[in-house]
Amino acid sequence: MIMIEGAGTMDDGHDAEPERQLAWRAASVGLAVVEVDDAGLLHGWRSDPVNAHEFCTWPRSLAALRERIERDSDDDDRDDFLVLLPDGTPIGQIALGCQNMVEGTAVVELMLDPRYRGHGHGMDALDALVDLAFGELPLYRLTAETHTGNAPALAVLAKSGFVQEGVSRAACFHRGRRHDLAVFSLLRPEWEALNRPRAWDA
Image (cartoon, rainbow, N blue to C red; front, side, top):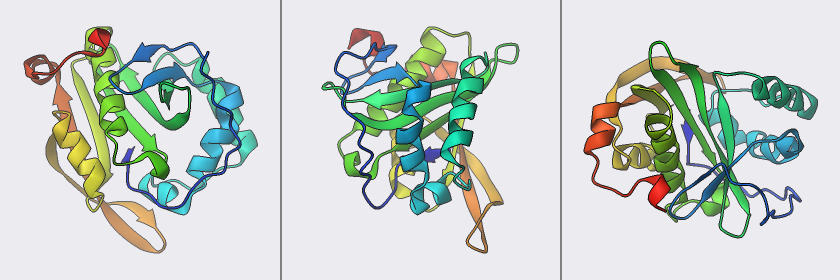
């Protein structure tokens, strides 16, 4: 699920980590592997009502999130990253989930702190993850979903080269209503044809 629209602010108390090891770099952000100690930060973002709505998920307890991070760290079909500014400030989470190396498919997820929207960081993070998927992994098809009313996320996906395939009708239930999800995909040949610098050139 791609979540760039949002509201509210987060006082997470998470100190910037300028010395944190980056797994991947992009134009304006870096990607660092999510660690168990990041659970409090992620829990704060996921507990925001708008974020929960966009992700079609009910916020879980901090303990449950820590357990999930520990479990996913041993899982070969998912990679989770914090999105960091050059000074180490964490501004979001991005993931490459449901990786199937036989079929060459994976699902992209992005959650950006509302305070850092509108500066191109979401697109840079998405481009970096796409470059990782196609430049370092043998993937062929990436998919992403977002609410049909989430204009910022729809725009970021389109600018990053994703093509809308259709709409999953009534695919998300929230606050007593069903919501439609826009379904996007990006294929390796389409990524190869993109005229932009790759993450490894940053």
